[in-house]
Amino acid sequence: MRLWTLHPRHLDARGLVALWREALLAQAVLGGKTRGYTRHPQLIRFRSAASPMNAIAFYLRVVHAEAEARGYSFDKTKIASGGRAARIVVTRGQLDYEWAHLKAKLRSRAPSLFESAKRISRPDAHPLFHIVPGAAEQWEKTKP
Image 1 (cartoon, rainbow, N blue to C red):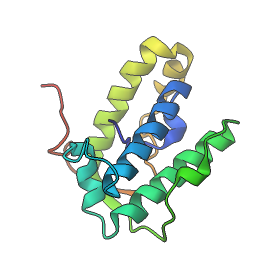
Image 2 (image 1 turned 90 degrees about the vertical axis):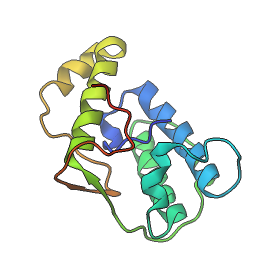
Image 3 (image 1 turned 120 degrees about the vertical axis):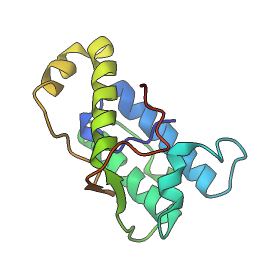
Image 4 (image 1 turned 30 degrees about the horizontal axis):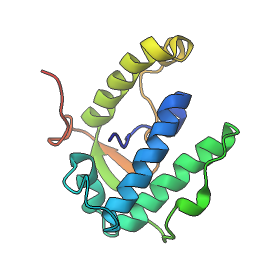
């Protein structure tokens, strides 16, 4: 499961579809509707939110909006109803780590997007997240 800190506009088609499915799974986990993935580290920051369900619903609405902008048909009715979500603090190191991780994926599966991505030094974050200085998050499985 990868719930990107990056704005979904940076993802290729395969990545956006995977994000949609994984965020829906996260929503099910946070809503207590599944037994699997309950201890997944990607959920730590959502669980720390004032309202985890509002946070994941907002996250999904942004992913859905990106999909619609691309002409995809993601089923919006799968998003739980939720009110406003307070922004979640995430470190710059986490965003930078994910950016490098995504670019490595794009290099092989979407070379033209990779070429565009190489010109971006500061990628946008998903609007749910407020970026602050710091290293990659402790729960991230970084490679040494």
